[in-house]
Length: 168
Image 1 (tube, rainbow, N blue to C red):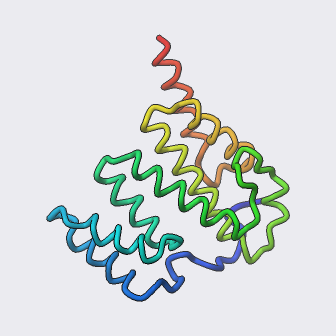
Image 2: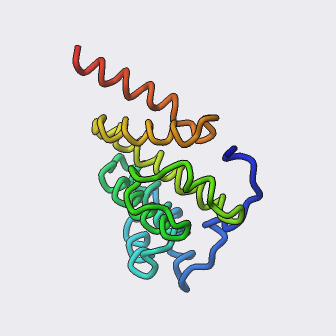
């Protein structure tokens, strides 16, 4: 299946959120430079812990703050929110090509979001030097995405090179 050949449905950022969440995310963006962005994001999270808008905002905030463990936690939570929407296995290691092939066309946007979120988890693990986990994730994505639409192949090569450099 070509992961670029689909019509977009269910874009997470178009979904409505609990009252006030959008404003809290906007306040966090406005207050980023002053160092007062985290509190509005955490308030938004407590109001809407399943909101992908909030989870993506938290991921970005923590990533740009170089708080990679916190970014990884937010990204794991996002994957857990997306997974049941598309009926994927609880453990990404059990994901098979048939899960993607059998996904209804209307859910392919969510499938791509899941795969890109998994890629982000692999990337964060790579940055944190959890290279074995990162390699496993990228290997899974390369198998599932033979046309490399998700872009995991280059990251897999980087992880393998990094592991070789660490051994030397």
